Image (cartoon, rainbow, N blue to C red; front, side, top):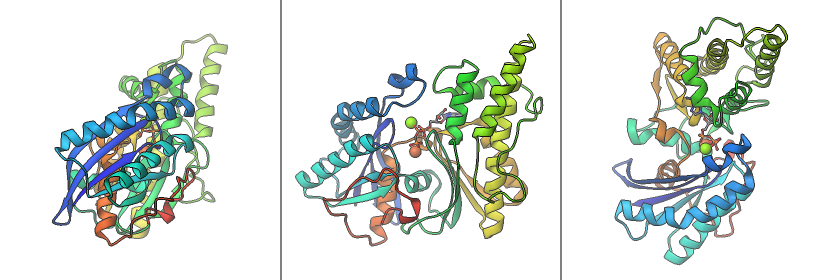
Length: 342
Ligand code: ATP
Ligand code: MG
Ligand code: FE
């Protein structure tokens, strides 16, 4: 069975193709067109620009993916219906419906978050029961996945900013450009991560065990920078970057490990663009090793939004016996992970 996945929930137009055989998905094509550069001068994703870019990119990206995979048409189409930006989702969903109708192949509606977890199987094989930590510009989720073909349980999420968004906002504060996460990561290498004691949000005894908060941290960085200006001292940029990054990585990995321990699950999967962060990776590796937990992290290209993650999730869901979605299926910008891909 050959499954095509279509992804357009944010600023990446992704079309991926996998072959499902012997209980595993194999990558045949992974084409991504990103509008990230068009958003740079606005310092964040502009929904209207993203939608228009998807509209321009979707047909050529579909063509490139089919050429790369050497196929004329797939046996099934899986498409992200949510969560994501309303106008952006519409483009991928409309394209998926049109091709499903034209090619007479079944359509399957997918949850974007499940795709971020499923994609890891392409590199590291079948997925056991796991806890997944998804961190990107739009999402911060702690999930409990018992089976990729079944709905996923959400353990916690952010109550304000997403982790990647916090990186971007702090990077902007430090004048590092957009998207600021990678630049901040590079700068932090030269800093002292214990130089400034920035707050760890939602870690008090009465706070929810698995939820996150990053807006207080962002404000603390802003206040620190303001204080430097007031006192006429130069902002120690690298120390601020390293200390901020440490605060984010500390809370994320601490809560992820806590979830594994509470649920007696011995596999942790990371996903989403912000898992490219070097400190999140190294602290997760260190703490997982200490706790006897197997850590699975897809390569960076598969961590950011792409179509192959949706194709891979689709393959698992279809193999699990799911029925196709009707052509009337609607996109669902606020889709909860609990209803997942079914
Ligand atoms: P979505 O939220 O729908 O998954 P997105 O476009 O917001 O999509 P991704 O494309 O997955 O997110 O990832 C981009 C985010 O990851 C940005 O916020 C970016 O700053 C952050 N990021 C990328 N590399 C790093 C890094 N090395 N350190 C920290 N953050 C990073
Ligand atoms: Mg993106
Ligand atoms: Fe994503």
